[in-house]
Length: 355
Image (cartoon, rainbow, N blue to C red):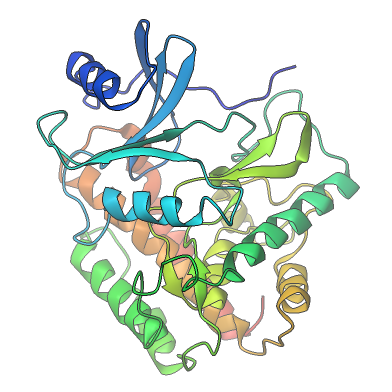
């Protein structure tokens, strides 16, 4: 049975001018010939991702969303640059093919990369796909291993010195995401002020060993081998990648990690299959990462709370666009409920001081 991720028809209002796109691609990528078919990958709430078939060739095109965008987000050139830098040292990156700022094609910069066909896990497993508890644990271990391999890359050696500013990274993140939340807050959103103040007061010093961090590393941005679904063969969606504190990256990943014994309302907000039998708990994930990195972490409550808060800000920024009529995507209408759940979850973690 084929469990590979599938593209679907393009959502209303997010169509591309296939004539202009086809002409540009054929003139920029050697060897393209045949009829062009454009579809859209249904997941993702930020940058838009399209599958483009030209004859027997499959390409993936990434462009910014329509409507209001966060000021520093959706930088296509930045995403293309990091893929280009990592392609020789991190085999999980899609191969980038071209980037353009020529807005005559679709009114915005965009880039094109190779497609990595495979399985992408979302809230529930594809029908017919099953993991034993042992297989699920192995997949969780592989998820951490692949993330740590990224953190361990010598970013200066691959030309990414200057791609980010590791000095003061944690402080900028806490202050920056707080500012973004306040700017995107709608009348029906919680205030999050208690959480933001706690994060500001609990900020750790700069990491002694900054590295390349993905900043959105989770199951639905990973491609699994269709022949061996425990194996990770691709890492997607690099739009928020930078140079920074690897523990901030791990905290952001575990902000999505709902486990089987979490409260019912948090279970309702689950977006990934992290409650399956055999799935590692957040504590187990942190302990394995400590072993991989050769470190001990005694303040992971900060990193986890930051990850939860950051996820709430991302959801609120997207909901802001829906609330103000800048997008018609009905998926966004329910995000406000998730924002409220995430605030309560963050407050609970602060109160209990645990994972």
